Length: 76
Image 1 (cartoon, one colour):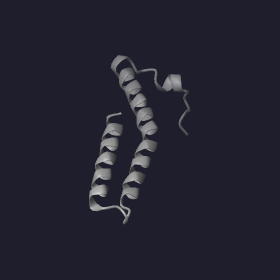
Image 2: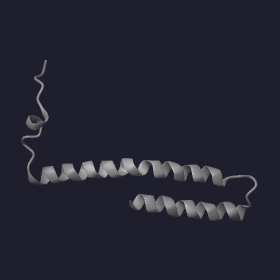
Image 3: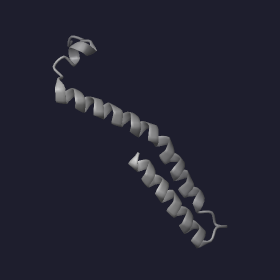
Image 4: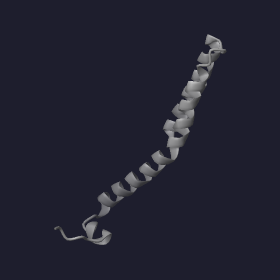
């Protein structure tokens, strides 16, 4: 069975650029996870816009608004 090591031993050979890339990756993952609920709300708005009561123009206008929100969430 392999020997278990603690985190400081596991990352002891990380220096400079590797450490920076690891920090960027962690921060990016946190941001992506934080924005996920907003994407879910936007997808719900897409579904709600297809109400049969709405006219074609109203659906189109609402879809443009939701597309803008999704783009803004994507920019972070």
